[in-house]
Each structure stands twice: as C-alpha cells, then as structure tokens.
Image 1 (tube, rainbow, N blue to C red):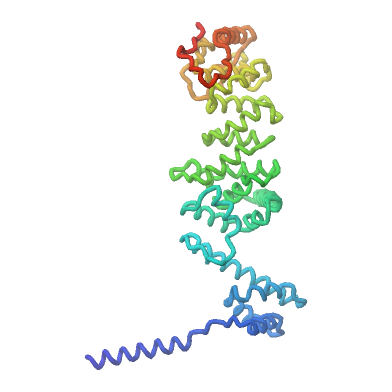
Image 2 (image 1 turned 90 degrees about the vertical axis):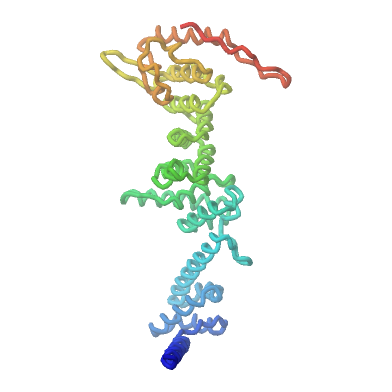
Length: 403
C-alpha cells in the first residue's frame, strides 16, 4: 500500500512538472521585443500578424506607449491593428482597475478614473458611491472622460449622446440602464457644465425610464440618483423648468418648488397650464412666504381647464387656482370659500386643481362672491412686515371668514 502511494505521488509530481514546462511563458516586455512585434503587425504573413497582435495584447500596458506611436505608422495595417490592440488594452485595464476601485484599493501611481474627483466631492466616497460610479463608467466612460477634459467638451458630448439616443429610439423601443442615465445626470448637474435646453429636456425624458424610477421610488431607494434628479430640477430653465416641475411632482421631490417659483415669477415664458401646475406645486410644497407671489395672479383670467356637464360649463382660470393655493397656504378650508361644491372631502392638491366642479365657476357673479370672501379675510389679516429681531410672533391665530 505504501509503495502504491509513493508511486502515485511520483506520478502526480511528474504530471505537474510536465504541465509547468508546457505552460506558455509570459510575453517579454522588453522594448526591443515590443518594437519587433509592432513591425510584425505589418507582415505579409497573416499568421505572423495575428500572433504579433495576440502577443502585444497579452503584454498589455508595457506596450501601450509604443502602440500609441504605431497608431500613426505609415503602414495602414500596422495602424489598424495598433488602434485595435490599444482599445483592448484600455478595456482590460479599466475592468481590472474598476474591480480594484470597488474593493476600495485604488491603484497608487496610476491615473485616476476620469470624473471620480468631481463625483466624490459631491456624492462622497463609500461603497454606494463607488458602486454608482462604476456603473456610470461601464455604461458611458467616454462621457466621463469628456468631463475630465473640461465643461465645454462635456456639454458637447452630452448633447451628442442625447441626439444618438433619440435616433436609436426611432428604430425601436429603448430602455436605458441606470448607469447610462446617472452618467448624463451627473455631467448635466456639474456647476460649470451648461447643457442646452433641448439636452435638458431629453434627460428629463430619460428620468421616466424604469431603471431611474425604481432608483427614486422603488423599495430600495438609492439616494445618489435621487439627489442627481433633484439637483437637475433646481437647475432647469426655460421650457425645461416646466418638465422638471412635472417630474418633481410625480416623484414627490420638493426640489420642484424651485422651477415652479421661476414660472410664477415670470423667469420662464409661461403659459396658462404652466401656471396651474406651478400653483399646484406651491400648494403642496410651499408655505405662507409664497403668498404674495400667489396673490399677484388673482387677476389672471387665463382659462386652464374647462368642463361641460349637463349643459353647464365650468371654467377654471389661473386666478381660481391662485385663490385655491392662497387658501391652502393660509391653512384654511376650501369649503369655507367654495360653498355647496361636491367632493368637499378631497384633500389631494392634484385632484383639487384639476376638478372644475370643485374650484371652477359657471359665471362671473359666483366667482366675484368668492373673491370678496378672500378680500375680507385679507383685510382682516394684512401682510405682516418683516419682523424685527426681537419681535415676538403673534399668539392669536388668523380669523376665518364666515361662510
């Protein structure tokens, strides 16, 4: 039995030794060898060209500088293969570094991952932020490299990317990954990057994709994508401000108050329907400090909603929505003003603002009667001047008008 065991050990040792001898040696990174291999990329023999390509790929980073020079070689075949090898080396090196990055082991002495210094400044350096950053790198490394080059190149690549995605969407159904959308959000929200309005509109459209919706509203909410979307909403201007406000309302993001106030202040060329949604947003997320701005719209007769029922026409004008907002901001009840209306128990602002039977009118006389009640309340509760530092708040609550 002992002899058989010793014999078995001997066979195993011999097998391992034979396998070691058969294992291919690691390609040399000697500059002279690399130069020879690059020359062979242009060989007349296909097999020689293929072997040189494979060997240079295995050598990897030590051959990188020489391959960069070969990418401008007069020989077309050498140029083509050098560029292809460089791409493979970059990808393999990136994947290796990303795995090290996820484990928290940044490679010392190597160039930093593009965009990371900016990203961690805003979103921190922990396992969640690194995971999000890796998803972005893998989804669109070109966009992050452009950001590293500066805000202008980043804005240009961002615009080009949205155009490419628009074209792709025309071909078929498009579903973007979280990494793709987060990459665009990250670049678009950098303070020194100024995306075009059309680019912003497209990015807001992408925020309706399932991947980002789940990150914002799902059971496992991710704070980084949510913060990105909120930041982009506050940066929105022009027509993008309206789309940003709608997005914020649908996802219950308080940042929607910023574009809503821009619309009501006239910073955006607003239409009647934009004012209605802006007032709706203020009613949900605003406070009494926004009341003066809302009251400026109490004379706006633009029609935003109209409904016909049983030969009766109900109109909701901007001033009606403004009055409803003012009532809600002052913590009063709508039924005190809009008496005899159905569905008086409705409390959701969206159901209130889009229900002509609740805050709309069939004639001007009824509207003026309600406006008079507000005027009486305002006369009894004039706007307060800014309080002095030592002033005490009034202890008596505001009176409500009689029905």
